[in-house]
Length: 204
Image (cartoon, rainbow, N blue to C red; front, side):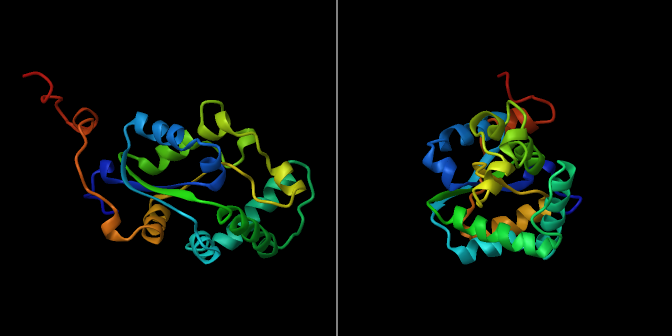
């Protein structure tokens, strides 16, 4: 985004994962983002292919290395032995499990727009691991999975939602999930309250 772009034009990608759809939490999840003042500008339901999911997670060429390194560190921080010391070996397993998880049923892909959309969505969504997500976040309130349980069962952690991690990541991910014509530019009335500088449009 250029320096001239207003923060209210920031967009982020949210994908309600198969467990979120199966547990009928779509409305609850959407409501959380709506309530804070974000605007839904794109939405679709689909069953993604394994190829689409692998491409999604590897849009960032550093994802394999960084994710593997973070996973190894997470194990060691908890006093546990990582399954491998090779970041790429760990990420290969993570990716296999993610593809199985994300293609197991329909997902809902959404593009949300508003000031600081990426950080706001991440804050409302909560940390990646439901067990350690704060109360009040979507993951903290609606799911009880953990890395330990996922590892024991050799599967991806079930955490309801994918949310972009940065503005650049969001732009790449939105382009991966949506064609330009599938996103809608429109005004919504609450933007007058959130973004009108002088609040001079209220009284007649």
